[in-house]
Length: 76
Image 1 (tube, helix red, strand yellow):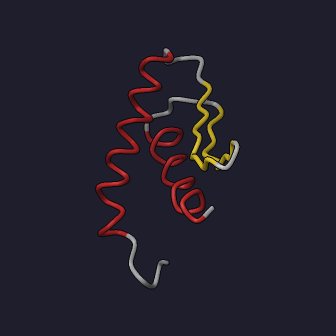
Image 2 (spheres, one colour):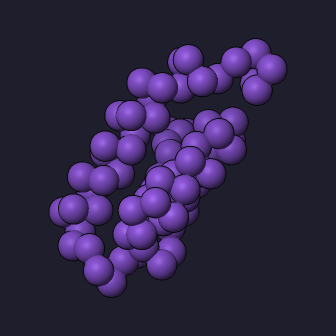
């Protein structure tokens, strides 16, 4: 839940506001038989599924690279 709260706003800002890829998108946690995961949904009428998958992967890579420097004790 902590990761979801930390990632959902930048996910929305980057892919919805900045890149204008989707009319609906969401990041949410999922627990399947005790396996925790972070899921992304992005629905678009102007971008194909392969490109959407690439944008999400690029976002995750960049986000994780920057998270260590960005997440200060005060923010946490």
